[in-house]
Length: 376
Image (tube, rainbow, N blue to C red; front, side, top):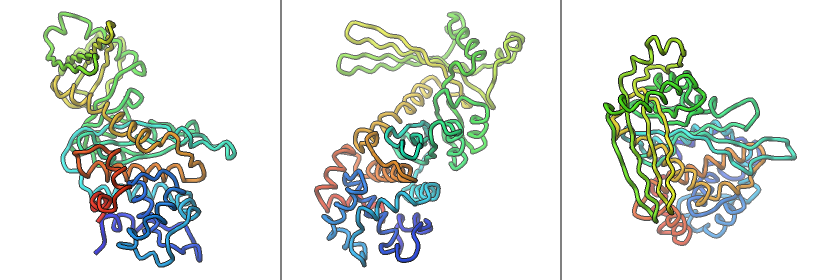
């Protein structure tokens, strides 16, 4: 019986030809993913891990020609079709299960050392969809910075591939675009988007509205307070569900751009007290769902979790910012591999950190098997 991993990746095209297929493709990917879960960060690490843990791998792989070399791992990840590999990622995620609707945060990240001066290629950037409740990456789309593509187009390509039914999609102001909002609604989701200067007329009207004390006095609101290491942050939200005034005579003269199915305006005012200083910031959002003030605060916090739950993990725990893979499709495919490993680690044992799970998997075959059991 095939494992979830085998079912998901069985249709992945093998880029090698003829005698180059000395090692089974699925076995190469299994070793690389296992090594990444256990702390490996490069193709050289994959090869070293395969040699040191050959006994572990022979307990569930055939390895008819021994373990792959560094060159084999490097060649495979350089040549694999990144779109097909990412599609397999999605099928594997279906096997892990992503039950329940919730916030899906969309955000982009540049792989800082993925540029190649010799080949004159720009750095690679990846737009990721992150389910905040389950802390799982549910999809990604990559592009080269400043090569005619952009984060906006990459995000739309990603959204086209996702089932958003019942989900609330959150994104920064760069994605506060009519076409993006329409696509989210088409895919069955709702949007919560940051409003900034790329919609100047609408922003000006919203700012004026929320600074009117008489209007704000009647709005629903909610407040949260967090204290940590002498830093106190109070976040207060106000929400407006009645938007007819945006379509009235005053609005007509300013010609604000209203997004499809827009049903919500929100303001979050964050006050931070730290070391005798107080700072106040204001963030405005628009949404297609009439969120309560409490739900609005929770959704905004869920969006910010992509920084700690994904970007910080990739940079600090997986050392992604220092990854030196630059040739061909290597940067894209290894970025996908890291997210596969992170999903597996996030699904296993919630009582210890991802960093500890990686370390213990690297130290103990038994612990590694308990983590990797999700691949079966």
